[in-house]
Amino acid sequence: MDLVNDFDKIIRDVSSVLGKSIDKSKYEIIDRGIPHQPRSLPTRMMGVYTFWYEGEFLKIGKAGPSSNARFLSQHYNPKSAQSTLAASVLSDKRMQDKGITENNVGDWIKNNCRRVDILLDSDLGIFTLELIEAALHYKYEPIYEGFATQR
Image (cartoon, rainbow, N blue to C red; front, top):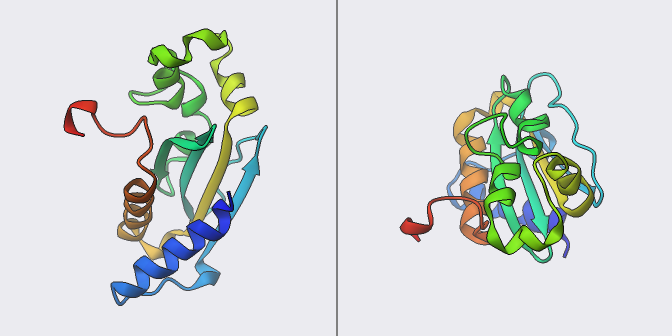
């Protein structure tokens, strides 16, 4: 699956149809692969992060320019924040046969999930960040986003 080109097309199409095209020089899409190593948000950047596993997205989220911990590390530790990928994986009964524990879930995510990040210039503003996150949610319906009772 060519996620980099898919994401780029979504960004171009959605922003264009709304009459506010996002210049390609203002964002970068980075496929960190499997296994992956998370990286910090560069200065004056914000980001959308995605975690893909066995053909579906587990989580798609966003981090503003002052939220490096959210972007870099919180999703690998089940106790680091309220809603993390690690906590969702640990509570998912479908994942219980994979030998994942609280102690190894961060490494399991790094070794088994494909991470693709979209880095955006912070001068694009929070609404641009939220638009891209929402467009990806709409298209890919990540399994650990939203409440099951709302679906």
